[in-house]
Image 1: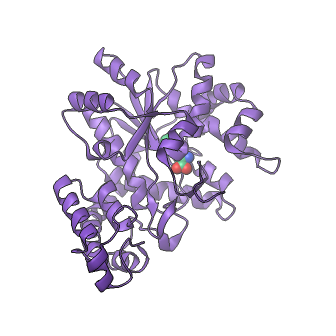
Image 2: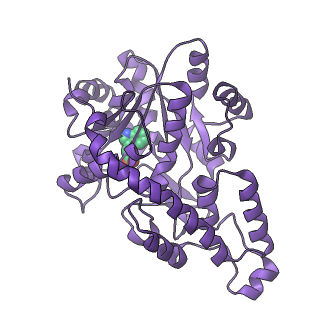
Length: 370
Ligand code: TRP
């Protein structure tokens, strides 16, 4: 991998991602200002994640919007691989999915792939990934979804529902397609080889078009799904992609739930959040105060600033002031970190209360096999 190169696959993200290059590489479309305007007009809201390019790319979002305007329905689908506790980066597509659900008044399915994480990780048992699936479900529910319109799919629990759809999909994807898409080798276990058909299955769980908000690393699965959809008499899933959330320890790599210190979990206490950010958050500041005052910091690579931009400071004016002050040297790294610590802890305080309550609600959300 050369210096300006990067890797984005569902199981491996590395390097400094150039999103324009990635759009070309994956063959997706950049979200245009026309599309942004259309979404704004329909939803009557200018969502900061769209405005700031946190969601930056799509596949056929136009079709979903046009269909919607003609009165044709669609549904939403997203998911999570339960390899550990939920971290704050995971919440990005979930919060956005919730917004879409409310604005378009549609059903949403949330898939927890305990099987996938068992197949892809050498250090996790199936019991552990299944346990994390239920833990992650609590974080999802805590965001305030409506159980009438929202169902959680746990792969090992809902296999009876998924399998007939997965079988249709699996028959149309051949080994050379998955191999080329994911770089599989003869050593890859066959669970992984079959897995894409299970992630595809919820796309066809209702007889309507689907829109999937997702991290761009998950796109390759749905590229395969899109390639075969018409062969099984279905519409291609439409997608809207978010950027990868940087790890606390710095750019190059997404926030991974399996790397303890580079990660802020939704279950972390205020004290742990404070310690992690002060100790590990990659800073775009200068080595000492004197130089920082003189030269200023670089918000574009500063992880604390990025977290504010991506999730924790939706107010553009406040964000711009932080940007300008940091760049000019007026705001020190430690001060920027304090702003973020306060925001995260404020968010987590209510989130953790709702997460507790979710334990009573979970049954209502779990999809029942028919
Ligand atoms: N494979 C995803 C992950 O590791 C989980 C997932 C399943 C998913 N279905 C999805 C993600 C649909 C986005 C959209 O996180």
